[in-house]
Image (tube, helix red, strand yellow):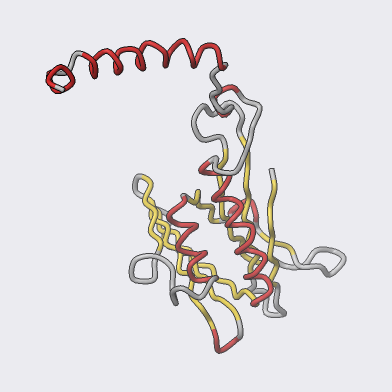
Length: 194
């Protein structure tokens, strides 16, 4: 499991921390890689005066390739905002999660806001990213896409190993096809007429 965290605490105690987590679950047959995005609100400081964050009650979203690609497009300056109408929408049962990810050129970076609507109500958290944090995130998300699609990634698991056919088996499978093709050409009425 790998993660990238960005902490944005402030003196008012209204900051947040985000985490992008790429995890591998080997028992998954078709797609063992998963990318999760979490955002947690800032809590009161600990005994040493350091800010704490409420990871136990963080908003967590499982990101798919389309979600990731929308965010990459913003990070690469291909579009101003991610998603349809500036929103990446997730629905699970009666719960909705909306991610807004936009360029924030006024402050030299990016702005994201995540809303979670459930039976308990609506929780909204937000965070600004610097250009540098955005660069790191872009590289990590691009690599996550490679792993999620299994492109450019070799794994020793049987279902991810490339299928190779021994040369003798390939010749044995191809030889009858070639012979049949040659035979059909010699049996052709056009061949006999010549």
